[in-house]
Length: 151
Image (cartoon, rainbow, N blue to C red; front, side):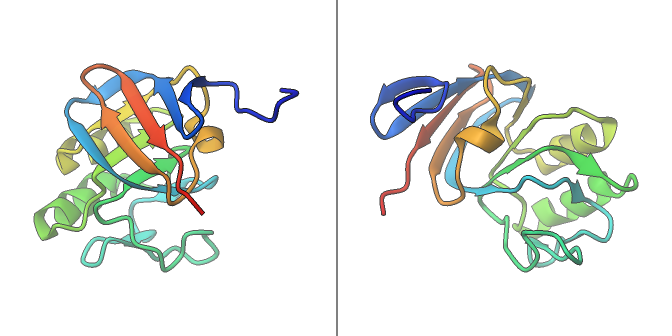
């Protein structure tokens, strides 16, 4: 766009709203952690610390615990449900999940984490949200509100 704005519904200079489909209901908010890379559940995350541990992943060493995890989707084996169930039990799971591609792996991981999760957005959340932005996910209403991090 000519003015440099993202192609989203902007409610103010610092707030962006996305609409999507509920996978797991609920409302949560937190700091965004965004990756352009898929995440492996088995061997890619450490549920004890809530950290991405996958070798060569752009988020390696970063914690998703209590954050809104924004990512394209899952990769790898069916370890998603076990890893994220354990993360929830240990208090290290994401506060919410926003992802582009729905698979059974990610659906099970989202369900066992008991965190709000959404997909099928009107605009790509990976392009609209930046790590550090404050994100409120209202999965029941299908609304994601992004408040830009101030520099």
